[in-house]
Image 1 (cartoon, rainbow, N blue to C red):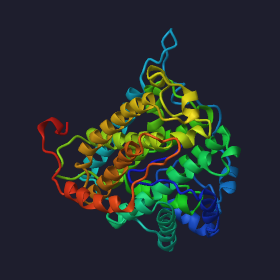
Image 2 (cartoon, rainbow, N blue to C red; image 1 turned 60 degrees about the horizontal axis):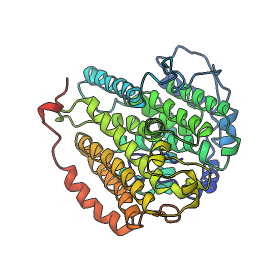
Image 3 (cartoon, rainbow, N blue to C red; image 1 turned 135 degrees about the vertical axis):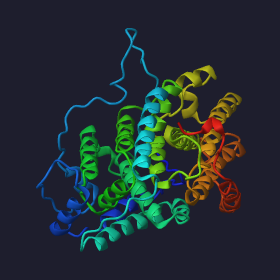
Image 4 (tube, rainbow, N blue to C red; image 1 turned 30 degrees about the vertical axis):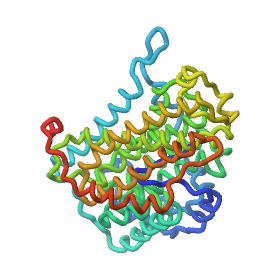
Length: 428
C-alpha cells in the first residue's frame, strides 16, 4: 500500500535506509523546552501538569509510547448502520462526503473568525524558536531525500505553507511505514491504537518528538482537523486485515483512507484563492478526488508488485464481469480480457483526475502550480501503462525526466487562470 500526497511522492525503494535515516536524528532531551512548547500549543487543553521528555524518534521508541485511553474501538466501517439483510445503510461515498462537509465547515468557521484563510500569527516563547525551526528542518530533510519531486513542488509555495506541508508529509510517511516498512511484520492493531493516541496528544499540544513538534505547530497555525489523520490510521488497520475488495465501494473507502485524507489535510495549508467564488465544499471535494485518482493510479501501476505480496487491490466483481480472477493476475499474462479490463479502470481514474483539476484552479495562487504539476505528472502514469500494452505485471510505468520537465510550463499556464466565477459554484 502506498500513501499518496497531492504531489508525486512515490516512496523510495530504500525503505530500510529511511529507518536508519530517521534513527540517526536525536532529539534534544529537554524537559525545559518540552514544557515551554507544550504550554504554547495546549492553551485550550484540559489536561495539565503532565511532564514528558522528548524522545528519539526511532519507531521502536514510538511503539513503546503508552496508549492513553486506548481500548476496543469500532472502525469506521463496522460502525455503519446495517440493514436487516446485512447491507450497509450508508455507502462509502456518503460516509466520506460527511467528512468533507465537516472539513469545509471548519475552514468556513475560520474564515468567518478571521475573514481570510491566511496563516495564524506565530506566537513564539523565548528559547523555543530555534528548536521549532530545527524540527521543520528535519521534516525538510526527509522530504528532500525521499520525495524529490514532491520537495521541488513545495519550493514554489510560501515559506509558511511549505513548512506545514513538509510536516504533514512526514507524518503520513511515518504512518505508512508502520504497515509497509521493514518492521511491518511486527505491527499489530494495538500498535496502531498507540499511534492514534499519540496523534491525539499531538493535537492537544503534547508532541512526543521533534517531527511531532513540527506537525503540532502546523495544526495550531492552520485550520487542520484531526479526522483525516485518524482516518489514515484506519486505512493502515484495513491493510492489516484486508487484501481483497469486493466492489468499488469498498475500494473507494480504502482509497479515501490512505490518499483522499491527504487532500483534506492539505487544503487548509494551501489555501483557497480570496477571489474564488467556489464553495469550500467543492474545493475539498476536488482535493479528495485528486487523492482518489492518485491512489487508483498507484493500484493500477503496482498490480504485479502487489500480487507478489498476495494482494489484489482491484474490485473483485468487476474482475469477474471481465471474465478474470485472482489466478489471472497471479499468472501475470496480458490478454485481451486484461486489456479491456484495464481500459475501464484507467477511464475511471482519469475521471477523478478531471474532477480534481476543476478544484485546483480555486486554490491560492501560490499553491496552484505545484499541485497542477503533480496532477499532470501522475496522470501521465496512466499513459505509460497504455504505452506498455497494459503490462503492469512485470513492467513498472513511470514518467521520464524529460516528460516531467515538459509538464511544468503546461502546469504553470493552467495555474495562472483565474479561479471560477461561475454562479453554479458560488459559495453558500
